[in-house]
Length: 238
Image 1 (tube, one colour):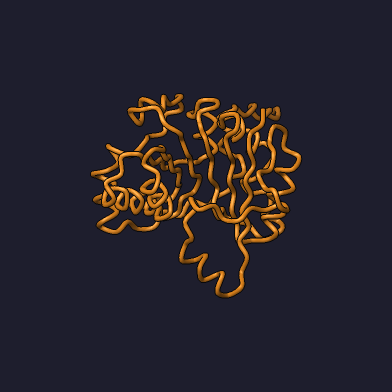
Image 2 (cartoon, helix red, strand yellow):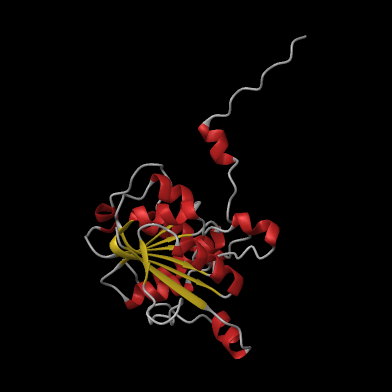
């Protein structure tokens, strides 16, 4: 019996095997989250389709656009959208309870300038976001993958920041924040050599927390315990 040559992997198979920066943990939805998903997803949810979005059609207007990757339970994102009704916000989160909580908060606040997606952000960037369509991309407190053998899972990598740059308008900002100093150093190392970006910091490598980024309870507790938080903002130059 002759040995069979394994078939070449398709691009789709390779894509499915790629290293991801998150672990999907579904968890149970509360009744409130479940109700919000049922009632608010048709209004504020964007299904993954693999086709480019027309954001003016999605929001029914033309406005500055802010996209947040990994919004957790959505409290800060809802607060930001409520504080800036002149801007449109898109949140991407893979954990369904977080999406449900965000939709619940957005409905309670009566927001019309927020849309959410429940999918891998990298695939959304690759397939659904038009070039130069965003004014700011936010990545707040991503999983630090602090063990050295897991560093390859960190979302901030050269190919990722280049993809983000392509979706930002010229002059648009990529804002990152982390409470892990080692990850802050990693982010800085990647961004300093990334083509087409310039740091917005004028005094040192990091930025003071901008007013638009809410101070979370977790962060407040960290400050009381003497923990640091590092904000990095880089602007697209070309």
